[in-house]
Image (cartoon, rainbow, N blue to C red; front, side):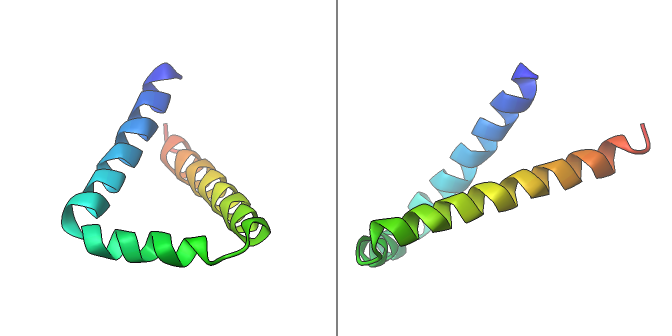
Length: 68
């Protein structure tokens, strides 16, 4: 279980690092655009991302453990 959490955190850091390293000015533009969105809308976007991510992880785990 801990190894899965460490793997997930590591992958998040890799993706975040790639965005910052490869497109720093684009990231700044995105952050400025996000600041213009009302907090409640940002909260709903965050909840949608959490839901989608949870479903994606569940589907991937089910697909890769079904044959094991």
